[in-house]
Amino acid sequence: MMRIGLTGGIAAGKSVAAHTFAELGAVLIDHDVLARRVVAPGTVVLDRLVERFGEEVLDADGALDRAALGHLVFNDPAARADLDAIVHPDIHRLAAQEEAGAVAADADAIVVHDIPLLVETGQEETFHLVAVVDAPADLRIRRLVEQRGLGLPDARRRVAAQADDAVRLAAADVVLPGTGTEDELRAAVRALWRRLQTEVEEEHE
Image (cartoon, one colour):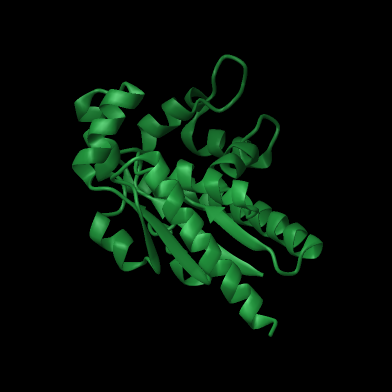
């Protein structure tokens, strides 16, 4: 089994890379999906978030209002740390369960963990390989404005809230290009996939 940590700044193209890995046969574990599962209505994690941040983080249906929670923690490092301490242990538990299931089904599985804040949460040393989809901050800001409809100040804040590009690149074993077209990024992922498969095959020789 090979464990890959996939990350990249917001709007760099990480989702395209993740989907390409899955199409090629990787077991994809999307930590954003897990993050939504652990805060579903009725979960202990959601109860703890309400206890810490108040009823205002719930919407009219009793589900987590992610925008309201984000507003509370965005510029408050202590609040963000509390959020991480509440949510991340259960995300890690679910990710470990999914990975164990994948390995039980195929001992040679290539498991890709799609983690937006991999570097920010200090997980880079836990993977056999860290792949970073890289695109400069100004390009990512422009994509947030033009493709996702964010205002320029909000786009800049979101990019600034993540790890500096140099920090992220320092953690990378492989850098995937997020500056060009989606087809170019997919081609880079396919090239990496061929390399990884060769390494797995060589281990069995």
